[in-house]
Every structure is written in structure tokens, then in C-alpha cells.
Length: 490
Image (cartoon, rainbow, N blue to C red):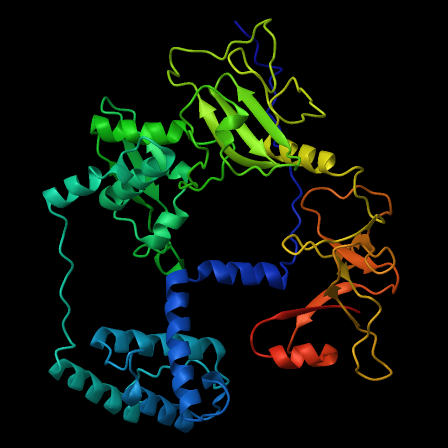
């Protein structure tokens, strides 16, 4: 028997946790997360309609700037009476109702009046209620109070859709279309719910049928906010029909291993798709230009039976062995042929700087390798570089030309100069962004945010809103109100 005298209770490990004060940006992120995108979209559309009416009838400012309840009610009454679609026809009753709620949300968010505001309250906005009531009755009398429900698909409709060549599932695009259609039919997803769908939402059931459960954590009818904090995600399922399950499995096996977590991906644009076990440069399509160098990378995985392809650091597709269960990627002592094969005479071009790694590069490593090799030397903080506009092949320059804004002006024009580099005016020095502390000579890594300082003038490249009165220029004045950003050296 074991002696228990020396047994001592285990001490719990104490972890000292210190709270940090959340920043305003972090609070704004949570507020944004609480908002429904569809609701915001609807609100912005109705406010644009309201502001168009106000502009057409010469009201000044914005609706949220109206500073008296009486004036607000009067403007809204006139808008309700006048509101029409873009073609001049009347709205449906439900649209008028949606519009009023949208305006109410907008006012509670931005109005200068005291909150809360409830323009639907008969006691507070009686005149507006009378106008709205009359509008609704008028629309009902015109037959705009009822709507016909959508007709459901018939069996013939479904068969006709599934039998269409674009839904065959025999290539990347048609497989994606077919899966999208299945998700719409079996899961009843709406547009935004399709967009938010992720691979992790699909869970294989551990039963003899082998179907899929699909967990929808948040939907239009289940927002999961503070008002229904105890609610659960919706658990839907894909029916255990062998041909349908096989189609989903086919879609899952052909996804890149390090792909974006979203369920829907862009179809591979390779001419032979992800369906060929023979890999060659000829299969990458006709997108290559003559007399131009490309960085091409292949990564190979035996466990996943796939070879991923990258061009200039960007993943463009993969190939998988057709009979995944029966075949292996064979590593042997045979020759590694690059640019040719036993039945192919060779690549009619130049190949340089070939490198072989004894591990599978990640997406980030391929991108880093591309950037390192695409530059004759690494870019570091303090590097002097030139910036070229891709489509015009002109260099970014100032030419030392200042705006005509008086003797105190320090702004230089930034232009796309000629196609020949001007070493005096086209050189920019790489610096840290937003006064971020860096050391000159440190490597500029992928995804670093950087700034530029013009070598000749010592001014910094920056952009500002065209409504910025402190740095207004003749160009700013011409572009005010069109949401443009002006670039200059300051």
C-alpha cells in the first residue's frame, strides 16, 4: 500500500493579471461589431434619398443639423408627402415604413437634438404621424399595400439548374457554383450570410450517414447581441445524400491548405484547373508576357497529396493526385527536371536563381522569397528608391515646384514625371510611418507600414482630404466634396 503521509495538496498557480484601459479605437471596433451591415446599408440608402429631396427643395445643411423639433417635423412631413422612387413611381407601404425607421436610427446616432428621438411617436410628432397615416392609406388604395410572395422552385426547375453545364462540378468554377446553390437551397443563406460563411462552420457528423452539420453563429434573424444574450447559433445540416456529400467532399479536398478561412474561394484560373497530376509551366495559362522575368514557386505536400503554385509571390492554384487514397507522392533518386520532361524538349526561355528547400514553404515564406529576389538588394530604412506608376511607367517626382499659395507655403506638387528617371527629383528615402521608432539600416519586412521623404526637398509624401482647409490647394478646391485624397510633399 502507498503511504499517504507525504502527500501534500497541490498549490494553484497564481497569475497576476493587470487591466489595461481600452483605447477609443478599440471601443469603436466593438460598436462597429454591434451594428448590422444590412441595416446600415438600408439606413444610408434612405438618408441619401432624404438628402436628395432636401437638396432639390433648397434646404440647407444636413438633416442631422436641424436644431429644432418643429423644423425637423416640418421637413419630414414634406419628404413623406413627396417621396418617390428614382423613376418617379410610388413606394410600397413596407418601404415607407422602412424609410421612417431608417431616418429614426440616423437621427438618434447623429442629430444635434437631444436623445432619444422617436419620430414614430404619435404624441411627440403628431403632425408627422397624420401625414404618414394618410400616405399609407393612399398607397393602400392604389394597391401598394400587399405583396405577392415568391414562387418556390419546382422539381423541374431544380433539375434544369443542376443539369446546366455551368453546374457540372467538373471544373473549379462549376463546382463552386454547385456548392453555392446547395448552400442556398439546404441552408437558406442570404447574401451576407454566404459572405460570412467559413470552412469551420461545417462539421462532419459521426454517424453512419456521414453528412455535415453547419453551425451558423450569426444570421439576419439571429443577431446574437445583448438583447438575446442566451441565444444559441443555428444548427443546420446538409442531407446525407451520397452524391451531394461527395460533391462537398470534393470541394473540401481541393481547397488550398493555407487558404483564407472563408468558405467560398475564387476559382482557380489555371487552364487545367486543380484536376491534373501533371504539373508544367505550360499549364499556367496565357498570362505570361514575353521578355519579362517571373518568380515561380512550387510547394509539395505528401500527406495532403497536393502541389501548390505561386507566381510572383501570389498563390494561383494547386494540383492534387486524382486517386488520393491509392497514390503517394514518391520521393526517389531520379533526376529533378526543371524546364523540361522526358517527353518535352525544354522551356524556350531563361531560368535563373533556382533554389530547393528541404521543407514546405509557407505562404508568407514564398512571398518573402519573392520580395527578396525581386530586389537586387533588400530595402532597408534609409534606402533611396524611385516610385514608378505601373500603367504609365512614369516616375513619381516633385520637380521642385511649389503651389502658388504665398510666401509661407511649404507644399510641393507631386506629379508623375517622365519615363526616364531624374536622379535629382525622383529619389525618395524610405522612413518609418507615423514617427514610429526605427533604426536606419533595419530591413523593411513584408506588411510594414512605411513613409517616404523626398531627398532633394526634405519634405514628406502625404495625402490629405481635399476639404482640409489648412493645406488647401487649387486642386483641392476643384475636388472638394468628391471624397478625393490629394497627394503632395509637405
